[in-house]
Length: 329
Image 1: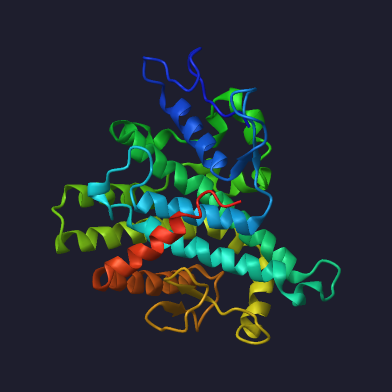
Image 2: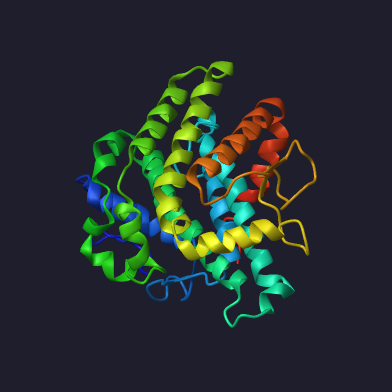
């Protein structure tokens, strides 16, 4: 994939006339892809090319790191004085870390070599990798646009549509994994009502003086974006698939035995701590059932919100550690 998105002959620059919404969404998508790539040629000697990381676990670690950077306002054009406005991304850093843990288990456990010919854990790994990758391609770009072009965000929010991206980059984008299956299921990354609500609430947070009055709009924004990512992206993309549901049923029966990880989210850099204050465990329902999963997500969000108020230093230290994974190889 090309390194630069050029609107005029000067490399790495944009035409003096503001580019349109389509061009900016295309640029944001290129940035999202590039965050999960490594350079394959020497820079300055020839045009740089990027190659997508092959290891799913490494991708998940990078995704977690990028979410953490957004929360910490470490992105270019971030606003450190507004740290906390992107509340969902702090929790998402822990969530993608948890996906990394699941992928590590699927890749390394000896159980993956048991029959049948295509081990269930390998199939599960593919579904997890697919969901993690395309959720990032969706949600990172919304945040990237908002951070870099806040004045144009409201004007452009309803124009995002993968099928209308700048044609100069469609050939590169066409090489993305699972693209033909994913895009129809996630409506070409178009905006949803949940997403609009989430970012409107981010604006409310920004305008609210620092202190306890920010707590509720931060949590409300988190839940709105959580509904977007869970119900509009992950549900149609992976959880509605019959095969994945059967695999999740089998793993739910085996969890906690023979090293099979439990369904949990740990608010730490570890996969599991054993501390009920940090580990939110799903004990009832099915992950693929949207109602059951949102009940679990609400449980995790409540724990996250409580810890962020009670011990923000410890929580942000963990998020800062995860942020260092953003360029993991």
